[in-house]
Image (cartoon, rainbow, N blue to C red; front, side):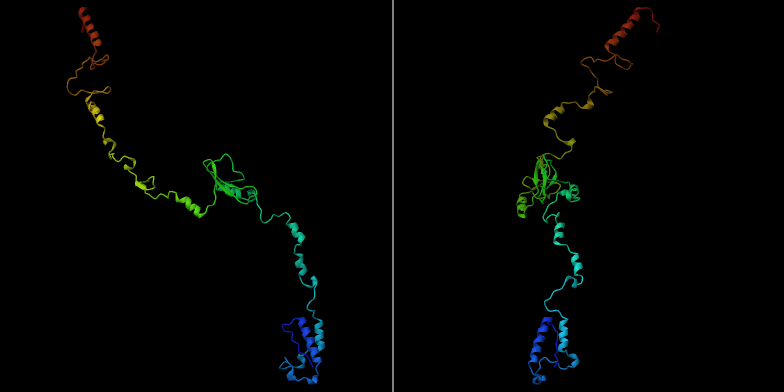
Length: 290
């Protein structure tokens, strides 16, 4: 009889084994003892052209490699080309000879533009903090071999590190600090942090009247002295032209006047004596024609 073989999901090795087992079983049975209805997994309909003979199956199995077998590199299309594009272990090691480990450091000069960018911020990169200390500077300290930078500012002749602080530490530090001032322009802050109006009383001048300089009062002693002084408009002054408007001007002592040069000027005794002597000479001498 013929044998129907289905490849299904079996591998080649499974097909060969199952076919051989079935073939051996059928050979042990007499063909006349087989009843069609007792044959398992038979097709509902079949024709002779749909069946393979043993010879055909044997031929097919000869063309199929066993389940466990090998291939050369040339049997796999493109495999050699793919391998040629790969580096060998020695080649990889050679390429990595002059490379650094993943964790390594660089001097700041190796990083292009880093020093210029930091200098533009007014920060100096140093590997030693310079002495003497210059106040008002900011430094980024980079110790040799250390991957980290440490920030320092200078004040009061010393270096102050800019270390990160925790929230709780900062809260404690700020608890005793003065809050931002929120008063008005006319207020000042007292020693206890409270606000008060900035006026005369705040500076100890609460009893001073709001008067213009011309109206400011003077002491009684100064008023007494001023009362003993003559008014400026009732006295003759040392310089300037002045006219006595009324009354008789009496001198306790004779004033000293210069020699007169004009007829309206006062004459001193010397001038009068000289003029009188000349008149006497004229009277005692010859007649004078006037």
